[in-house]
Image 1 (spheres, helix red, strand yellow):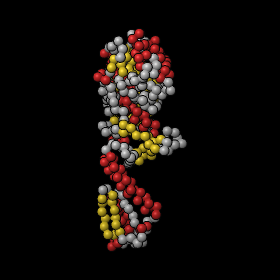
Image 2 (image 1 turned 180 degrees about the vertical axis):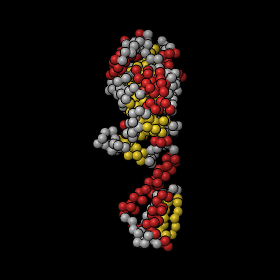
Image 3 (image 1 turned 90 degrees about the horizontal axis):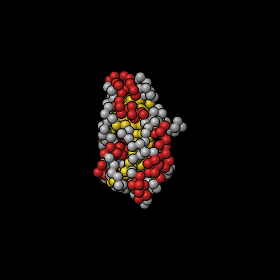
Length: 392
């Protein structure tokens, strides 16, 4: 501080960190600069006779500089660690302070580059809870190659259908649970046209995500000023997931496994029909992205109902059956998917009595044979995948 032009020895830029090295009387006179943007104001201050910087200013600039260098160090460590997980180092820039966290009394932040994933073309600021639902919606829709529309509430699908058109997919997704759809997050992997937008616009929802929209569709959807409209872009997503808990951090590989026909093992006398196989794979994608314990009932590539987040698998099934019936669905010929094995045959028995004809589950219970036997005795088909999909 207070340096003359002759006191400044050099200005250099190393690895994205800009440094001004000046003759300093003591350590407190040293100022670290983190970006080119800070050059001119700092030089103006230094060149002005008698100019001084406060301790707070020096601490802030030092903090900015070490943010750059520590981010660089973390990247180098993770490169050499090569996924071994010998230590946890995660550095993410671009802090965005949110209105609040899950609840108004909690502070919330997002670190990352949302603009790389989405163009927000309408609506209010995205909230903490919106981001949780958007993340769940992206994970879910990425399971499907067919044109699909999904409606999510609290990170779970309450409606989903695969159809030849966005309009048909929307109508059948909404039919799955038109009550829960209120205030939900909507996502599709198809372009939203005017006809679909006119139907979608009839309900209240928080967020809609699509790869693109027709101009006249945007005019319709943009009628609500707070409605968040996102255009999804191609972006590479991380392969690791982590969460802070207790006095540490949990880290795991993201569950990217998507079962196919080749992964199915028929364990009953009755072989499922091609239509049942298609529906079972469809339901399995949904149950994989639902909170455990989870059961999904589906037919004709439409989510009829699901039971999620239950402490008992039987309770999850009963919840799904009750919901399906409340919205007028006929469960005869439907399929059932479970995110984990059946410890007893009770779920299979309950599903059978409601008309379910085929079941997909991971298998692996010491009492699997009881479920297999029940299916054989009652003419049901069952396949196992060998892959559990817990989601807590």
